[in-house]
Image (cartoon, rainbow, N blue to C red; front, top):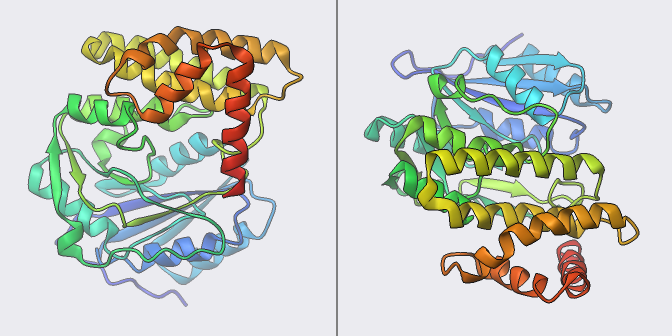
Length: 336
């Protein structure tokens, strides 16, 4: 028998899309955190992206038990395709995305909704979440008044924050109007989809309400993530395409942010370069050429992150010293 979640007809419906692929170990914690939201009118859309573990059964169980949960099963198509599928299945006036191995504070969506309602913007965001690893359980904020404090940033201010990585590009610590989400589709068949969509969302909505709190979203770090995982040619192809698109659009829309764009493109290319096996000289040569497009600008940019300025400076010493730096940084990441 299905149970009914407490819902308010006075508040607009928020649809929460969760793309799912082989995360049976984490899925229930994620779903339970969404069902425990203080915002009372939520629709949960679980998109099973062709999982081969027990995720399909878990999704079906939740959909059968709760009338506010719907489940969509599809062939595996990747994160962007699953998100796009979820948006099509949504009925809400607002849309949020949660990764299936993460979990959120009970006041997460209430705080974001308040910021949108008070400012009239089409998007509210956090700057970032709380990183954690398996075995850790970070305590998230529960005070809705404290969580709801925000800053209202102009379109350009927010773009600059994302490009310099003061605000993370991820789609998951935001709430969007349905109108905004339907204007910007996630690029299917590519990695680094959040870098592709972050600047497009901001460009479409203008001002962005940014919460001051950063303890409302628990972001799980796994060895198999895009940023930490092993290299494959599709990552390199995606990097080249995503940064190409970013340069074109940011030059067209925000020529005054050209240095910031270079900084972000350098960071994406650096991550990909660091994952390339030493024996793959062709891939190294391709990414090395890309890095050299941006390194001089990053070095002289006073706003660039210290990590990127250091990496860019070492890259000017030559490929061998840069490989040593990337190898050391990669070992440090995997040691965490």
